[in-house]
Length: 401
Image (cartoon, rainbow, N blue to C red; front, side, top):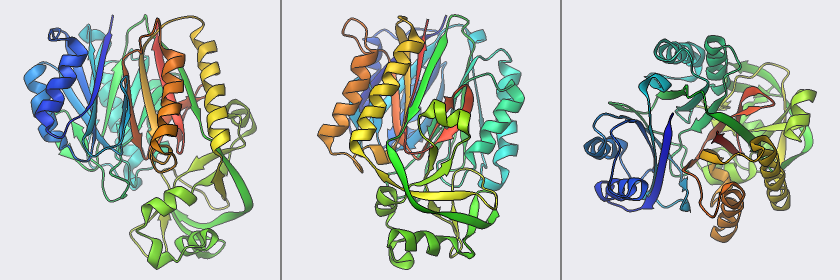
């Protein structure tokens, strides 16, 4: 049976930060059966240096990590450059396995996804839950999920998120067990037969205006909207000047969420007719990319956030989780949050309120379960039983017995 242990801190010195996390998580007694240690670290920490310190505490564990725009732990949320969160998993080796790939890009997302999924399947064919993290820029995340569904059969829940940086959209980092990269992905398979999962993902945005139609595309790079260069058409709808605002990531995050239509059955489960997509400028002038592949004729609406809706939808999502849990106590929570739902959209008080709402709902006898979350560029979370990539959501995967 697998066990989960977490801690989060805000300490600038990486060695001290890890020492403190292990002290909080284990109170000085680290078990011998730790198989994996996952580290979510804001950009002020270097993941390779963090991993080296982790290995002094847990020399037999695989260390996996990601950069992010902030972390969430059982201690709450933090988005300073020095925040760090850790989740350690122990238990029988036949119930736990990891795999990783490098060289992941938009054009090879499916192929690299197959490589990753097959490597994990070879180690743990009976995996019943998969935690997936990948680079946050340029990847076609839906293609990654297609690869995992092909290898594992489509009924194994895949959850997790994509890496981020400090709101700049320049580069993201992943630690793959023995190396640091900017184009990686890693996955953890769980095969504990006693574990079950409850999952929800929710946003609080509404679409408005007339849609833009994709008229030219390559994979997940949109070349044209309505026969105009995509970035210029998109910026014009937002009232931005393309050349002046293309590097102003925060203004795009704040105002630039796109919505695409969901099939009716998924829209009902999501309680929204649209799923959101974050946009970024491509390397070539006029090009923009999404984190999913796109087809000519696909339509996208601009969106506006609604704080009341964000809170009410989160309350509804927590009620759904309680229904799925059916009275069972959570043993671990994995949270992937869009960095736009952190300090970019909310002040500290509101952010703490929404995190507190989640943790109050999932605590047992006043104790918050082991909790690992990050503010990233996208979220993996099942939707109505289908593995799905989201953006602008709070996605929660709750493990229980």
